[in-house]
Structures are given as C-alpha cells and as structure tokens.
Image 1 (tube, helix red, strand yellow):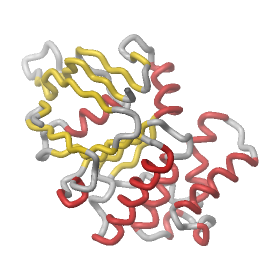
Image 2 (image 1 turned 45 degrees about the vertical axis):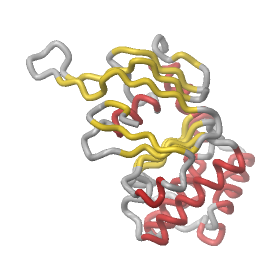
Image 3 (image 1 turned 135 degrees about the vertical axis):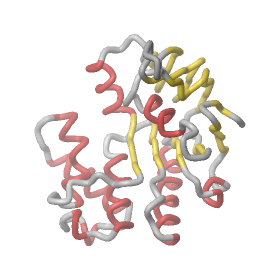
Length: 224
C-alpha cells in the first residue's frame, strides 16, 4: 500500500478552551497505481487530510504509513527525506519561482536532494518539460507563462523525483475548462504510464468521474 491511515485524528489548540478536532478517526488505504478523487464541501477536512498524508503535518493520534514506512516515530529530518523522495505536490496556486525559467523550476526538487547541479538533472528536467508539451517554453521565465502553462510546469516539477505518490490539491481550480482538462490529462497519463499513485482533491464532479474511485470527506470523516 502507498497510503495507509488508521484512526487518524487531528485537533488544533489541544488542551485549550478553544480546542477543535477537524479529523475524526480516519481510516484510509490507497494502493499503488490508484488514481483517487477526494471530494467534500469546503471546511470538511480535505486539505488537512492531504497535509497529513503528505507529511506536512502530524496527526494528533493514529498511525500514518506512506510508501510502506510508518511515519509516527520519524523525526522532522526523516520526514523531510521521505517527503522529498517519495511524494510530489501540485497545488491550486502553482508556487513557481517567477524569476526562474520553467526548466530551472523543474530542477529545484533535484537540487534540494543532491545539493549540486549535474547534467543529469537538466536532462531529466528537459524530458519532463517535453512530456508536458512545453519544450519551446523551457527557457522562458515562469512569470511570463500563462496560467495553464505554469500549472503544467508545476506538474513536471512534482514529478522530478519520480515520486510513488502525487498529491494534487485543487490543481485545476484556477484554470479555464480547457486548461483544467489538459492538466488532468497529464496527471492521468503519468499515473497510467509510471504507476504513480494520485490523490486528486477537486470540486469538479466531471473530473472526479474520470478517476478510479472517489473518496468523500464530510465533517472530518470518510463518508463514502
């Protein structure tokens, strides 16, 4: 299994009068190569759930296993290692460095892992840029690309380390219909060609129908 959560709870302001629990005993298993939509109303806990799966936050209680590794006892350095090598992220806002070229943005995760650049990094980044159809734009500054092009670069960057798991939090939310469909198609293609497991948070029911299954989150619980 790529993701396995058992009785995961997440509360904020623990022990204070304003303590609030936003995830209530989540049990979830996602297998290798699955492409899952995560849906639910705003405030239902979808993003909190994704942050915990992505090792960006720790649960208050329960266990989280990612790529076969139990994470509960890992320290911050070990979590950073696992996250950097095994998990890719695509967010609603692309978070590119606008003063860097598209190619340089895709190279960043590799630089973070290796510290020093090498020709192999550039070659892999160029191959990923090509796979998202932007070879002609690879040397353009990210800030000069359209919204759809920037999100394609973000997809390529998320795949730079060949992660087993890709987490996409509303990646098409700011895009027009055509660009949204193109970004979704890219994620689906990588899922099918490389066996990358994808969790795709969306409010778009049409796109969700094209996923393998839909995980419904309501009031901090898996509803179906």
